[in-house]
Length: 145
Image (cartoon, rainbow, N blue to C red; front, top):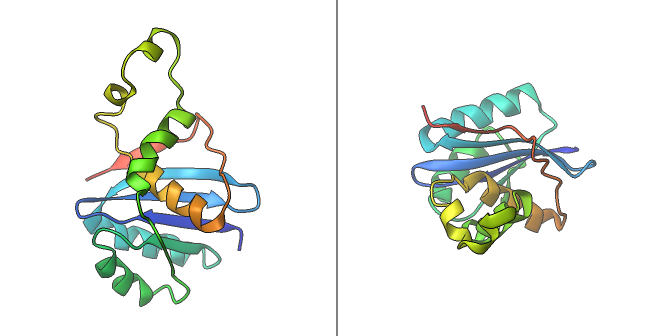
């Protein structure tokens, strides 16, 4: 299996990353309302039976794990300690500050960013002990409706 789907579960929203293990490349990055994540993951799994599904063991993960285990027998549960905190650092690796922005505090540039997808990326990178390529052209969407 070369495709992997990583999930950072949360109370109100979840981060989701779809990547290719062989190429070490991220294909999709989403932030999805929590009540939609089960339906979306089941649909992805139904369309691609060869995809590995990886979920973090943090906030509200128990509910998602119990529900996903019913339809995804090989669900991988991974450690996600400090993934959201570390996602802030990864954000600036992917989107480095340039010019005069470098002299301002970095935190002001991520105040309104949904870092949940990057937290899912951190979970996936830690589990597979790989660094994935996240091109600046990656389509990062927030699907909260």
